[in-house]
Length: 231
Image: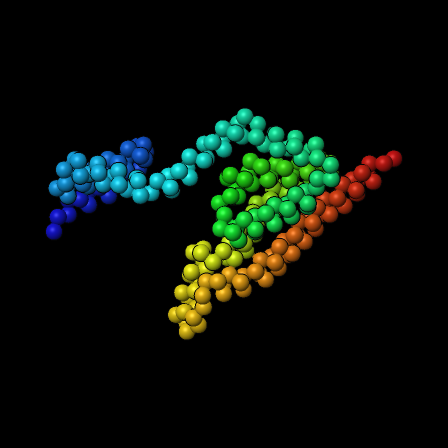
């Protein structure tokens, strides 16, 4: 048995320990492993190209992050805040409840990547919720501002988690089906999806109540402050 190809693992460990460029370390270790396994250079390059092509959709995801970073640098969050500040009747509660419903419905249709923390919550939903809260209740102290931002992130989590199980082709449904089938309860993915609908409705009602409760609590705080400020 040829153990020389295992030197590629050592090269990865040494390269990371010395803080070399991770891409160069991984590619160099892959090329070294292929050569030590008696493959020619052309075969090694072909293997790297095939691996990249097979996983190109995973690589495309990372391209979104610098795009979002550039948009934020050029004022995406500020524009989102300005949009909410110019809308009549916009409150934090209404905004997050609408986003909760939107997130659940799109996740139930299989579009679970249409939202998310890096591409939706941080650049859009969170600053819009903060602007709506400040518009309705005045300037927020740091702890209440963090509560609003946390509620925006939690809204995305709840909407996705309880919405995606309605889509019968999601991995979680297939996992649940396998567990039930191994226990002697054969169920189809569609049956599991149908029974996920009541749970999603309950999640919408409960989390919607949590959002409106936070909005009312902020309103009571601003009312107390304005009352204490009067002569």
